[in-house]
Amino acid sequence: MIAEKKTNKFRLSRILAVEDDKDLAEIIQEVFDQSGYQSLILRRSEDIIDQMFDFKPDLVLLDYLLPGINGGELCGQIKRHQAFSKIPVIIYSAYPKVLTSLGDYGCDLFLPKPFDLDELAKHIETLLLKKEHSTLLH
Image 1 (cartoon, rainbow, N blue to C red):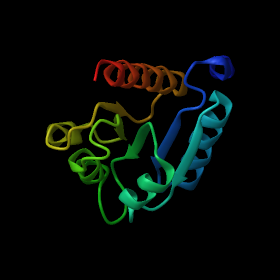
Image 2: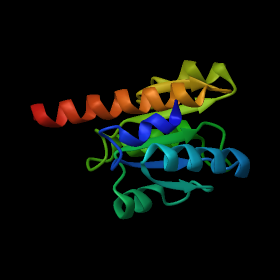
Image 3: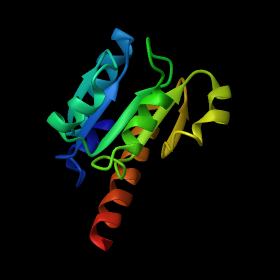
Image 4: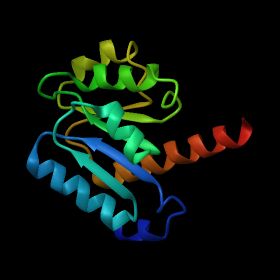
């Protein structure tokens, strides 16, 4: 299923992900590569806004539990920044209790870990389509 994504209309989309676990970061990178996305996988969350200015992502994927600052707080920084407030943000976590605080951060989607990679790909396509549609209307 993932290999089919090579022909999706969003193959030139840019995805920035923050994942501190090396193995999961490599898996995410491989999925994005196979799906035809341009991606930047960060292992640390410092200076995410600077990274976003440099990389110009169309979507951001964040692990919730990160050293230093959690993914929710990163999402809040992104959503409060005028240049990035419309960029879809997906947060994932193995701890569903974080759902109670996610409304404060403004994430577009929460995925519980472990998640299915094909499901992640479908959610990414849906959010990119929604973003594209929103951009065309404004």
